[in-house]
Length: 370
Image (cartoon, rainbow, N blue to C red; front, top):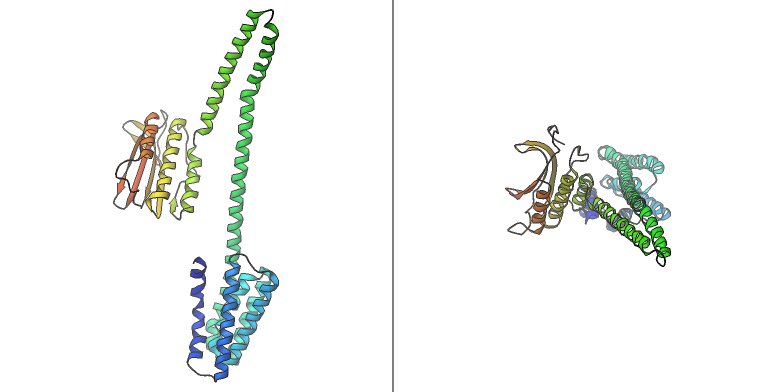
């Protein structure tokens, strides 16, 4: 459907050839040949353009198709008159879409020149001059669109590569941290276990002391691992903001999300609570609200209770089908309360809004926004 929406409006230039054939200005043989040539022209054009938007033909097939189109346009325009000059628009489009740039840069002017020559032959230079810039510029605009699409594809591949590299780096960091946390402890446990085994027959008291040391080291190692895992599981607000932008865009929701938030002096518990709130809000927007627009704001405010960092997520959707707060909002309220924050969520006149606030560290100056 997207391809049709893009391609069909361009078929407007076929109105003149169709009207010319329908008017009966030509002999029966010329009319039949004109319909056959027009049908072949349109079939080749749509086939090449549709395939060029996906899995393209090989270069030889594309070059042959463009050559056939060029010949058909020249023959039909020279034979049937100036009403057929619009076919050169499609030839120019195909040159810009299919050929390499260095080839397209000279075939597009050549197509324009052929159109002008056909207009001169048909004694219809006014029509030819009216299409001159259209034929010339539409071909070059297609080359620009091709480069834009290629750049977008490369950018998506680069983003995927960066995400993969970040995941790999995170795995390496996790491996290094676990090695640093457990390497020494496990080595000490192994050594003391060996000592306890040697002492058991003759020195049970010393062996018991070694076992006691093993227990202490093991408990400390367990505490270290739990703290490390808690740190890894804690979401980061900057990462959630980036993820929100990607998720909303993928769901065809127009998103306004701050790119580089200032999280200076924001407590870790407060940042984690806001990150969870943002994740829950974006999930609701994508899955339940039916929204087409979503705005995320991150502001520093001064309240009667002190400075706070405020996260506001507003959309133009329905807010879901539930009549009361769901489990997600209840859980968020509990998380924010543990961090000393608050949560407000409710329907607006045209949408839904969620506002989460967490206190900033004491003595932080509050500006206009983050």
